[in-house]
Length: 99
Image (cartoon, rainbow, N blue to C red; front, side, top):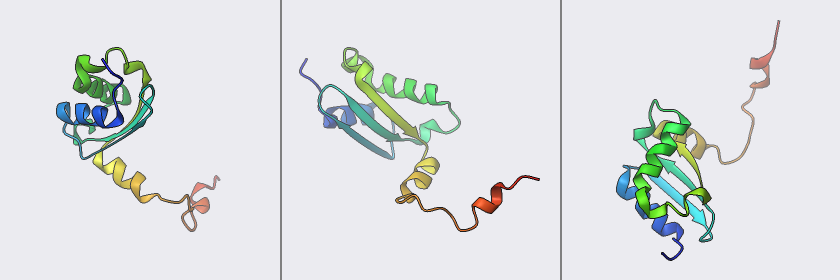
């Protein structure tokens, strides 16, 4: 099998898992995917990754070790995608004082 492209991996995941957002970057050998799915609600990181591997199925048995992923729920994604620049909230340091 030819090395999959990021588009291939994105398509494979989308076919097997209902996603709100998928972004895959890679060079044919190593891939990094950001996957946003409501299916991840209330599940652990390991369970989320298992769902993605199930979606990929046998297509990537050889290449699967080269896939890193960030799995997020829509709510988590909303928070992450809003954070475009690391600007501290005004007064956020005050919230961490100890008595």
